[in-house]
Image (cartoon, rainbow, N blue to C red):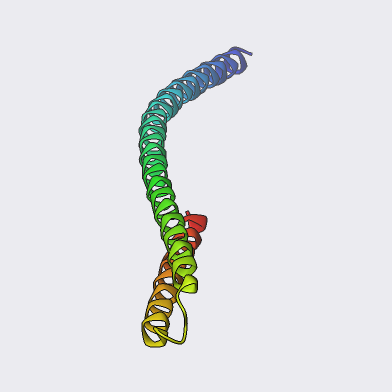
Length: 130
């Protein structure tokens, strides 16, 4: 009976030591997990700041591009108005007397208008991508 009590006591001591070792390991793991979470929080915060800065930069670039497109649109509108004025002026001339001048001017105006319309169309398609 004494041997049996000693064996039970030893077994309880071993269980107690095993329990303490397990608790110590759990504490170490908790500290490691906490440290890893802090590290990943710092990384996530840094990434969020970088993303916000990049979004601000892209918005500024987009606004700049929109301003340029608006200016180009205004230029194209002015050119179209000038071309319309030139066409009206040329139509008042007698085509028989100044046929060559009329043809050269009309072709030049038409070429310029189409050229700027193509530039405008290209820029509009670029801005739709952004």
